[in-house]
Image (cartoon, rainbow, N blue to C red; front, top):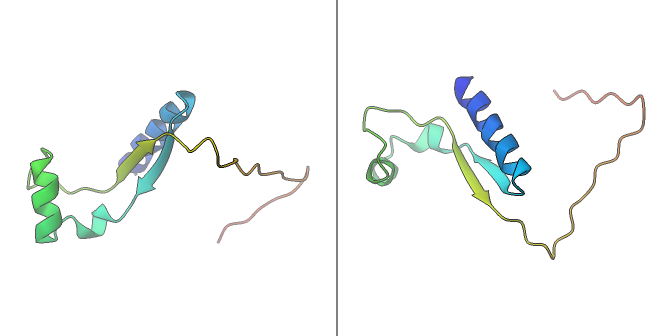
Length: 80
């Protein structure tokens, strides 16, 4: 949960700077794969640390329009 909170704060900070972001979730299940572990260790992550999430940051292509979401007043969305 701490990882999720930290990543959300990174997303909010990135958005405030006009930077797009994406959560890369697969490292949590693949960080013990030998090739993946070798790569993340080369980035400075100690071998005894587990990676729970990763953030990709970048600038959106200005040629691709943003899809605006509109919600009717009084609408409730339940995600199951």
